[in-house]
Image 1: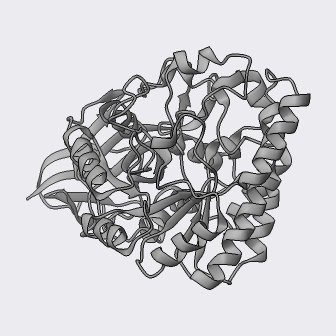
Image 2: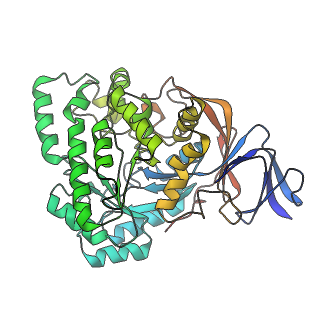
Image 3: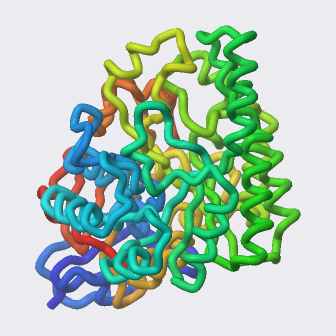
Length: 457
């Protein structure tokens, strides 16, 4: 007898969708069965008309907990993840203080374990760039490492100490130190010198209230130059380099030019695939993110890069802020904090791309789940529904609609989701299972606080 049977749906397998029933025992996929041939089960979930997907793995997520609870907590934002079909997420090391020492890492791991509704991995910042610190992070199970090529924002030094390396000498040291660990080295890549130049010019000449100003103050060349330098350095370092949140046609061209020179991958995000600077102008400072949302030409180039494999990952860069923080900077893009909630809209947005014919379902799912599970050493434990895999599942209605309205999300940052306000995505998350247990069903988060597990490679 099995614990649960998902019956009557279409299951997404590595070979594509298949009309089979899926049985679950002890939190894992027990078997795939032709309709009517499954063994006796304790619970049956009717999936008629639904598509059964492996639970989404979001490899780029921020909540900054336990600092800044007014922006969101581990509980609030992992509840939002469950509502979005995300069953595993990787939290970035920006915290207060920065997750740049093993002691801070252990404290954050304990905090997440106490409150998370879904499974989680934790990034580490390489800190003092010593082998001792690196090796301790590996022992503790850091899912990957993260660095910035930009300096710490003013007044936030403690959040970026050991994470921000604007000098190329330190960037190369970090790549060389982390090469051979088997863990990705994820980089927020923008040129510190060019950012300073263009922001100085923008402050002197541009309207701070315009939604087009942010893109001009941090133009694509800042990103493409930093990425080119990293990829050139990685020819020497040979780290497992991953470029975060690619935004521009210029950077796509750089990625193609360096293809085959080292082990590197890249990601982009729905905000760059489904919005342009015109949407930012409409939404105001609530839609400010770093790097900026750019033009239609850049958006088109990103879709082409997803189509030809130049970019193989789509992530949320979920970054909640309090409404008061954003509202306090209304009319001033230079002063506004950068970030937007995205954990609940990732899967619906990609299902919408499937409905529009931009991608087939398997490719869309690879971009937000299976490719990440492979890159971070979790496949086929996660990212697939083959027998033996974790029974992490997102049940979706491809014919349904996800209507995003301000204040309507589960995220604590639902009042700052102006970028997506009024958007209808074709595709809807109906139910989410974590290790075979329902954590979200029919509009209600049912997962328990502390039910999520720490994930290591």
